Amino acid sequence: MSSSVSPLAPKTVPDMPVIAGVRLATAEAGIRYKNRTDVLLAVMDKGTAVAGVFTKSKCPSAPVEWCRAKLKGGKARALVVNSGNANAFTGKTGRASTALTAKIAAKAVGCSESEIFLASTGVIGEPLDATKFDGVLGRLAETAEPGDYLAAAKAIMTTDTFPKVATATVKLGKARVTINGMAKGAGMIAPDMATMLSFIFTDAPIAPAALQALLKAGVEDTFNAVTIDGDTSTSDTLLAFATGAAAEHGAPKISRASDPRLKAFVKAFNQVLANLAEQVARDGEGARKLVEIIVEGAKTKASARKIAMSIANSPLVKTAIAGEDANWGRVVMAVGKAGEPADRDKLSISFNGIRVAKNGARDPSYDEAQVSDAMKAPEIAIKVSLGLGKGRDRVLTCDLTKEYVAINGDYRS
Image 1 (cartoon, rainbow, N blue to C red):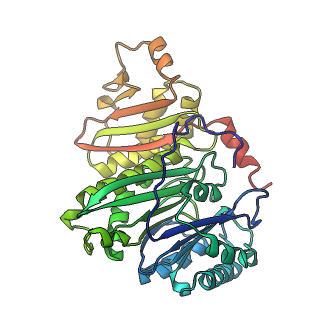
Image 2 (tube, rainbow, N blue to C red):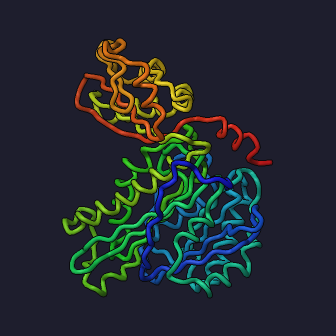
Image 3 (cartoon, helix red, strand yellow):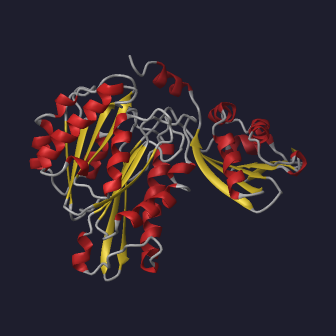
């Protein structure tokens, strides 16, 4: 965790309302860090629905495997998250650690181990000593309150420079329902379902299958449209919990994601996901620029996404942005290597609304001083027009600075 906050951090932090049926507590378990909280326990009321999406890495962490297996039950009573150790690439020891953590948590909360969900973040390849949770989770279960989402977000940080939280309130039937979310992530971020760690809580009465469908659809243009460095984590986990408490105030019970009564809720739900995803991009390791890549005129949306990701993951593009250089030649390179339909002579490129290239050549009105001044802004928008069709997409990334190398050069040491 950095001692200095990213210059791209949000200027304000929202007040996070209480969600009925959710209680939170954090503690120092000494997993890796000293003098900071590193474990979060979220306790949910009986009947809470759960949904989740995870990394597509072929080397997933033990907690990811645990959650995938338990997700089939559709119900959750507790979430345990630790920072400092990812419990990934830890073999039988890692699986034993998740089993012991779940056993300790289930005893503390008073539920079945199948209702315990786990997530770990931090160093890969080092065994996680789950005995450190013994006693700690018991105390947390006793002291958990409907409370402090900001403190919860801080407890799960690693190289993050600020805690990431978002909230929305919307009407569902006759009731007002709340959606609260938190996330962590600053490096090893390349979406492949989902990215980093994120947890969403709501009091809406939504069945597990419906919640799963909403979550799977919601991540595509939010968490799955963010990349920091092109590296997909072993531990990527996004879990959503719906306590259903709002049913007591007139919210209808939802069993299908296609229920028309969900329209406003889905919009708010996706806004929370988008807000958290953008905060991850704003906190990219060493980042000084938030970068939006827009690709339009592609053959399809899928093609536009691949091209946008090719640009966003290019070290040459990202270092040029760090140097405040509108080097459109590097953008052309990234478009060309994406493997998607493109016509050099139809290609146009702009930086922060200033067109620098048109129809495969430098724009006739190009003004170096004007473009250089625009590149000094903390937020950079690169738009690429392919002129081939109606496909359009957008992804978020950040620049690549010397600080990224410094952070990752000695991460384990």
